[in-house]
Image (cartoon, rainbow, N blue to C red; front, side, top):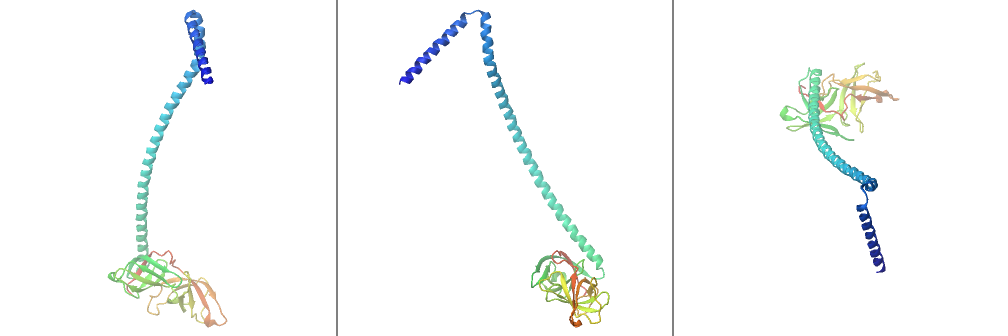
Amino acid sequence: MYNKKKYGIVGVIIAIIVLIILFTLTNIQNSKLSYFENIANKIVMPLQNGLTYLKNKVNGNSIFFANVNNLKQENENLQKKNTELEEKLRELESIKAQNESLKQYLNLKEKYSDYAAIPADVINRDISNYSKNIVINIGAKDGIREGMTVIAAEGLVGHIISVTDSTSKVQTIIDSSSSTSSLISTSRDSIVCKGILNNEKNLKAMYIPMDATVSQGDTIETSGLGGIYQKGIYIGTVEKVENTTDLTNRYALVSVAVDFKKLETVLVITNN
């Protein structure tokens, strides 16, 4: 209560002092008034300048936020254009893939022009430990039958083992149950190349004649014997020769020409 009284008295005193100053100012000469105006200007001008700066700052912020909105709209437009360009790029990639596939077909046709053949795409593959088969997208309605030879640009793939109306299953030469009658390029000796369990890159060349000369780098091709494959289709090259104490048991590892994990396009020879 005492504090409130105290503050009230002080307020009255300040009011009286202000009134006295105002009264004095109204009665002094103009020359003296200019002195007080100068003092007032020194006090007021910094405040006015500060207010002007704040006003300009606010206006600057408005421009900044307007620019932010413009940048946001430009960013949305760029994102839309980027999406459109990505779609066009995917279309071009699809066209490129189709052209590449057609190019592979043409190369195969030219390379194996002596054969009547139908091109096909690999649509499924079962390259596992125990089975190494692939499925292609042509079947009985395309004239495909069991036993037909399947080749790629690099060489022999395998042969048809089952057919539906629109698909065919191919047993590849790297399947462990596959046996391919073959010839050694240098000596022209007959051998048999068998698939190896858990191996997708090599065949085991067996039944090498005792007097046959087989060396690393020799090419291996089909012999035409056995009634499955035509003669002269490239299989691969000898990677390593394993000699044994008994020459009848020696064998060689043949590196196959076809990369079965990346195989996409094949030809099915129809004039077996």
